[in-house]
Amino acid sequence: MLKVLKGIIDPQDPDQKSARRGILLGYKEGGAIFVAPCTTYFERTGRVPPGHVLLNEKNCPSFSKTGFDKREILINIRDAFCAAPNSKWVAAAEEVGFLDLKSAPRVRDLIGQCLREFPPRAMVYQ
Image (cartoon, rainbow, N blue to C red; front, top):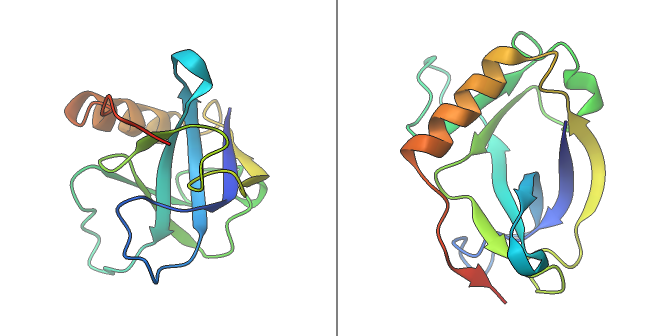
């Protein structure tokens, strides 16, 4: 199970962008957390951008427990980042739900594939 967080700030977002939801993918040495920012699915053509995983009610039976407030969500594995727990990027984050990967093996496999294609950056945002 992966935690869904509300209130993360993606270091790659423009300054005017507000906090968003993200998926906590894990922890690094020293306590840094590894987070994938999420956004609503903006392209209704059925094409998912490289490095992203589409999450919805069809491919995730426990979608209602994730805490997302939109019907289709893109998990941005390509731009996942590591941040110190007390950094401005994740300090205000709170858990709002969870992603049950046992009930969504296809999503689990796609996240794993994206992590292999876009390995985590070594930098930890302070």
